[in-house]
View 1: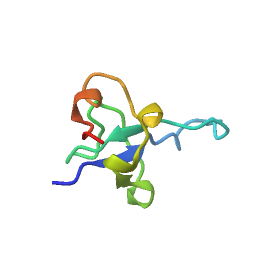
View 2: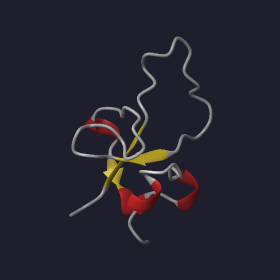
View 3: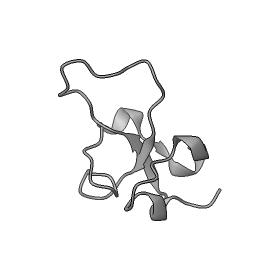
View 4: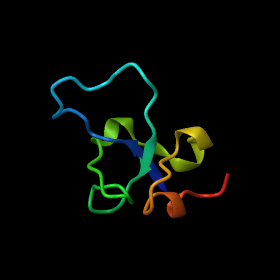
Length: 69
């Protein structure tokens, strides 16, 4: 099974930060990340093996679900 990574959904923020690089989270079947944040729709999803180490969520829930590189 391919693990999918996606960025957090920040569309509901009044002024979301669009300047810095954001970490990716592991997508779960319920549409949330392993650590519980709501993720964006499918247009920004990617194979988790392609996400560099510095761009991976380190929170409990996501951290243990990242595939080995």
